[in-house]
Image (cartoon, rainbow, N blue to C red; front, side):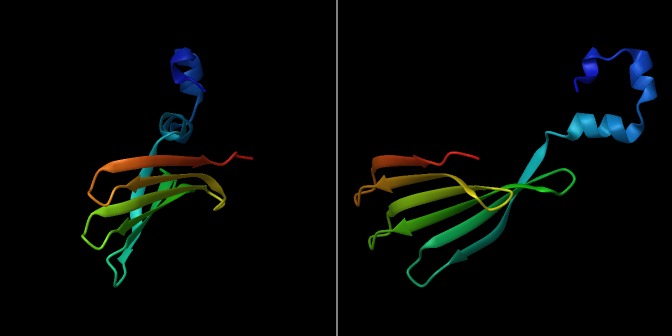
Length: 111
C-alpha cells in the first residue's frame, strides 16, 4: 500500500501499528552471524538478512580460498532464500599472480 495515495481521512482510520508497518515493511538489515577460518587460512562467512520484525529474509555464504603465496584464489558467494533453498551462486576466480581471471555466475531459478 502506498501511503502517499491515501487521503487524510484514510490515514486517520489506520492504527499507528499499521502505519509503521507500511513504512518499514520493505526495510531489511544484514548481519554477519558466523565467520571462521581454518588451518590453511581459508575463510568462510555467513550473513543473514532479516526484516525489521526479525523474520529471516535470506542468507548468504561467502567462502574465500587462497593460493600458497597468500593471494586470493577464489571467492564463492552462495545466496539462499528464507527456507535455505539456494537461489544463486557466483564464483570469482583469480590468477595466482593476484589479478582477476574469470567470473562465473551460476544462477538458480527461484520457485
